[in-house]
Image 1 (cartoon, rainbow, N blue to C red):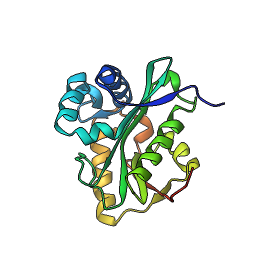
Image 2 (cartoon, one colour):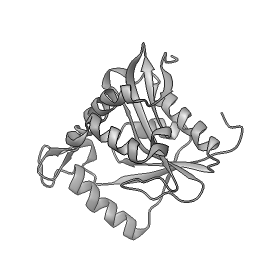
Image 3 (tube, rainbow, N blue to C red):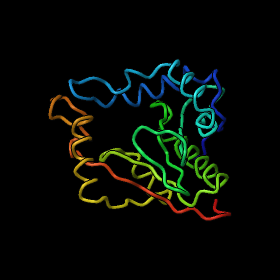
Image 4 (cartoon, rainbow, N blue to C red):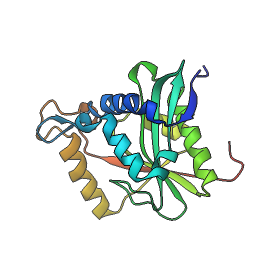
Length: 197
């Protein structure tokens, strides 16, 4: 069933809803002493970030249904700051993608990924990538859209296990984030070709 969502550039009027969607998404994951990861997601964060890095705002979009924000995606490329990833030449990285829980399964995520691929091609990128924690149901969507899991080096795998266990694992918080108990994460990548739909 096609979604009625439209994709639009992120504007200041969207910051409150972007923070809400990100907070909802991140609060399902807990760090250290059961601190929800979305605790810092506030409108002001986006105002500051996009004022400091205007290109980062150009690489962000929202999904709208009846003028309501139901999804958000943030991309980065070489030269654009990202906390957890350093882009290679020719790479567009999906730093964050989140869909309002009430709108999941309606094609909103697909629309956001399609927009991301269009942006990557507009910026002359050869591939698009993302990181995803094992157990995230969105992995199936990424695979359907042509993303492939790429193996990590041994050192990278060890760092990932440590990081995922610290941020999402039940080692410290028995309630934990159940679907992430494996302490694994994947790097996924999709090669892009000009003229690709």
